[in-house]
Amino acid sequence: MEKILDIISKKMEQAFMDAGYDASYGRVTVSNRPDLCQYQCNGALSAAKAYKCAPIQIANAVVEHLSGADFSMCQAVMPGFINLNLSDSFLASYLEGMRTAPDFGVEKIGAGQTVVVDYGGANVAKPLHIGHLRPAIIGESLKRLHKFLGYNTIGDIHMGDWGLQMGLIIAELQERQPELPYFDPDFTGEYPTEAPFTLSELEEMYPTASGKKSDPVFSQKAHQATFELQNGRRGYRAIWRHIMNISVADLRKNYDNLNVYFEQWLGESDADPYIPAMVEDMKARGIAVQSEGAWVIPVEEEGDKKEMPPCILVKSDGSSIYATTDLATMVQRMQDWNPDKMLYVTDKRQNLHFEQVFRAARKAGIVRPETVLEHIGFGTMNGADGKPFKTRDGGVLRLEQLISDMTDFVRSKVLENKIVSDDEVEETTRKIAMGALKYGDLSNQPTKDYNFDMERFAAFEGNTGPYILYTIVRIKSILARYGAWEQLPIAPPANEYAKELMLCITKLSPALESALRTSSPNLICAYIYELAGAVNKFYHETRILTEENEALQQGYISLIALSKSILEQCIDLLGFSAPEKM
Ligand code: ARG
Image 1 (cartoon, protein in one colour):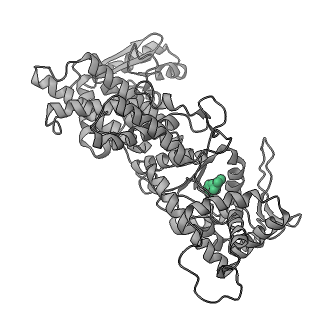
Image 2 (spheres, rainbow, N blue to C red):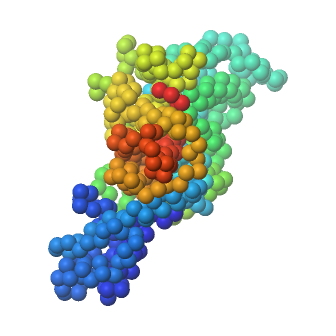
Image 3 (tube, rainbow, N blue to C red):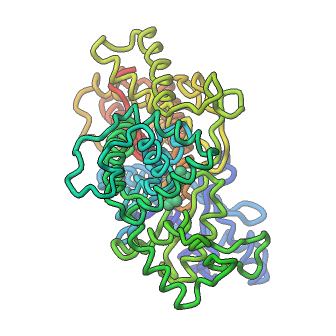
């Protein structure tokens, strides 16, 4: 469906033309004085300069040519503004269009385009910690938003599965169980299908090994093992597969718990086969140059305000680094999916890395000139006190722990308020906790740091996930008491609260499009917060279930039903859902 602003801008442009002025002056905007009008056009003010006459004269002439049916008011006011209010019938028919169209008539602006969202950022063999919450939540939401707006979307977790942590584990395993066949270079048989460690052993081995990095002998062994793994040593590849099997199963479980699902479970290791040819090609074409024994891609550009070090492609010891895998991954993505857009969701401290990689990719022609590359660098999540989030003993809090703390906190509220029957407690708790956690995060602009405040996030009032959920649940309960509501058409607003709510509903499309264009799920949150507010205001000021006038009541019901569907759709874009009761 066409957006309201576009519809009325067109009418305004036509009116400017009919009055003898250029159509380009007819752009309408949302009013910055909502107390005076809903929409406004300031075109007469700029037209006045071009046509050398008083703006109010132009505004008056234009208003003469605006057809009446769509506007309850169109007024020229000094010095030359045109103020507009939509007519009730226009509003009702627009909303009826939204109600009956697929996906509320939201325009599929991404149709025919493919986007890769690179998010999650999990590193194999290391448990997810709280630092992994933001990339998972923000990435999932951006992916869902793109999908809803028509893009073909591919979410790729891009696991860290190829670096030194693998060598560290191999070296640690060798110290503990040197007799295993993986370490016997002459072994030619089949390796055991059963891994020589469990998940919890693996989770203990990595930090232990990591703690020994300062021991030069051990460190050398780990580096050597990494090198041999990457160069195809059979026994090490077999250990690697064990680590992957165990670790990926656990990662899946954790991401499932968060309602986060990846279309692709690729990792740095999958980029590895693309590296040799890519590097050779870059050397041959002079894209990469030698510098102190390493191969680098200079990425400085004229007008750079800050220092822009070259992108290192191959280190002087011949090994590849983070940037190399990211470039090779782009080669793979372009070859397999030919995306129009690639989004990377990581901590903002990786800004420079991505700036270098993007420039190098463009310089080398790995992506098309028009391929959009964007790094969504998010800020830090701190504790409620604004200080870095730490466990009591100063360690890094595991993501599982954070989720279970939030769940416990919400469960106690659910039990205390006696909201649901015993068998529904867990499901209800889980949904509210997820809403609290995700909305608490996503309602902030991604680049900003924020404080994780469990009590505030889980509050049923205020700008919180549970407040939005509560609004949905409240509507559900009214609808359930009313009966069959699915076919009821939207009626013209019967009071000012209904009108406010209807105007708010019309802003769905613009809100989603701005959220997409600026990669800001917080704009979806802002929209539903406003919508929930308008619903609640309407609900408080209007007798709905006790209304005796049937037609009036049907109009109320269809309006809140549409509000509910939109709220549910939007929280789905944020990655959570509403319980039946709360
Ligand atoms: N594993 C990386 C980390 O822990 C994040 C990966 C982000 N994606 C990428 N294509 N570099 O920092």
